Image 1: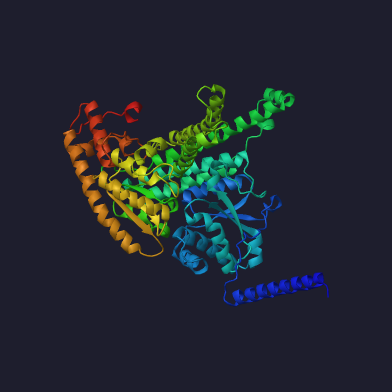
Image 2 (image 1 turned 90 degrees about the vertical axis):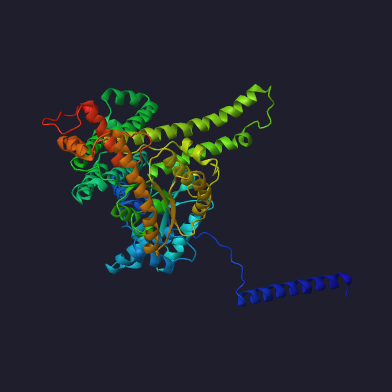
Length: 596
């Protein structure tokens, strides 16, 4: 046998030995449960355009006001949709039963609520395959240090465990900001859908702020909720039934003829006029004025002394209204407090501010000519222009967002608080929490706590967050330094979960007792400064029906947080302007300028 043949035989034998060793190793790893299986995102059947008339989009997780308006927008754009009810403890238990361990309660409540809804559909006679084919779930995605970024996969895992494998999840990506896209042809983000969603979010924020300002002072218990629900239903009907602007049908004839000759002009004109119709159309503005009039009919007594509690914390926990945060808003009002809720619009503003500051921080490394010398003016100009184009777009978006928000405030009566400046929040938070530190609400929790404290806009800050939420845990740690610096701040962090409601309410009651004492002392101090008796204030208010209207705007006075103290100071000014200190036989009617 030749040497070459021997070499070939040895090579074959060695190869066979290696193969058998690998097979044996694989067998032993499999028996020991050590087989490596890399995760791959499962392929999901898309939601296509031809399914829009047959598939219902499910969504939830916001307040019932926001969800009513969003549902109306979906319907107006031709989608079948349904808002899930507020998640309860049964939903939480289902989420824990079918989901992985170690998630925070927003995930358990959300997926448990969806599974609970699907199980009820099954009880009504639908098969599981029909449910998978006829329904999809629309939710938010995320990225960064919060585990929320993995919840899309967790939702699918829990649905599979519950017997609804293959159920479709559509994502709205937080990382994409205002450019978010579900990425599926069945859910198309048109101009009408985008502008409608803008209206829905801002309307939900504004009317929610109003109801929390009115309800604590209503003279007839339950009247605010009754009137408010009817008013929200009317607004929702307008959003659902409004006819979308069409250029060829609704634009002036001369403009249509001009657009026929110049298509680009037609596209620009259609976009601008469609935007104006959505934001300033007669139907929407009339509905807002009607909302104001219906709420204005509620009679209130603003001389009741109530501590003002600012709600802060993790996004989901601070806006949900139910078992997800121990029904905290209802509890606070029942305990005699006035709640200041956080608008979702603040989060949108934060995303734009974060994008602006990130672009500023990345400016040196993303410049076309990062090493341009001082004398290379053309290169330095190119560097600056690249940053300024992005900065200008984000700045314009921020200004427009605030302008549109104030448009809703103005046409609904002017009672709602304006959005707080993101630049101011970042400035106040910066000594304690850097604005480029990401995760959860970033510096917002700290910035809002400091802002509402130094400007005397509340008596107490209540931070609501899920148990084990990493970004909120960071914020709580920073708050220890904040509270040590601002000794007048009453700050209470509450971690929410599916259990522990009694303990949480007990802790809030203890902090609220101090806030009540502070509110009472503030009220008595303001009343003493006016030099008037409370009976004199009551008599003047009794003579002027305007002062008992729910939508009457009481001017904000610096250094006064409580509504009752603000109201007494305002009424005292009115009495002084008319030269009266006692009840008069004939009371003057307040002019419009004085009432405003």
